Image (cartoon, rainbow, N blue to C red; front, side):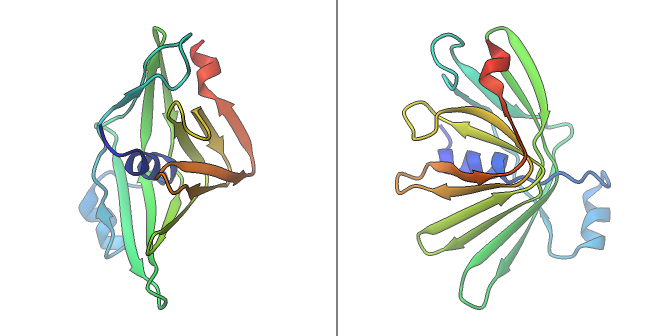
Length: 168
């Protein structure tokens, strides 16, 4: 199973401004930006026993997520994500599709990780964590990473869609 932090970071802060479809053309207009690695599917009982296992996956045919890495003067690493990322959520016999692009930013400084997404962000909270569930945030969303490695939403503006409610 992939680490939850990696999945959340990729899903939650992935950017989506679908301009072009070819990587060379995109890189030509923004040097230093590289194609982010695609994610494999993640399956867990995210919505409780009534829904059962839920699988979240990305669409490999439309995956165009890019990341640009910066090192700040204080040693902080900043990852800026943009591009296009669509997610498919399957559970309880239903299939839902979402644009989950941001853009988004991840800051890493030693053991401290901070995340911010704008636009559409998917939050995946595994069972037994501080914020279990599956939600789509539209607007600005700020995440903090707990000592356990799980990310939690600390603030948001805009709309929240409870995906578990849509799967029931």
